[in-house]
Length: 98
Image 1 (cartoon, rainbow, N blue to C red):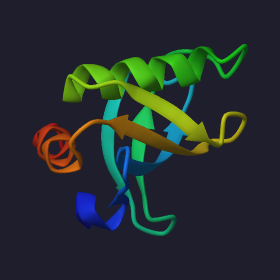
Image 2: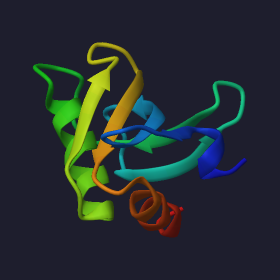
Image 3: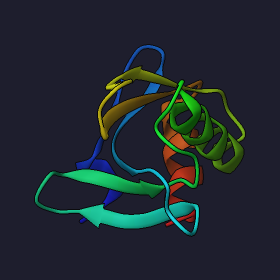
């Protein structure tokens, strides 16, 4: 599976479909969930008061150097994140972290 299978270009940047695993022992990107067609992201934060969402935004933003915003799935493990800016550049940077 490739990043292009779980992402799409939009007018605002690159949208990426994620499957988030909160309260993990290690934070980071952990490959692809081929069944759900999502990028797996593990975070240490609990899914309380938006803490896991903020950690996801900070992690993706740190990897790409661009602003990342959870646009859907705020209370679900299945989330969509918008990486604002040039979609091709965002995909290249995120792909480099896989």
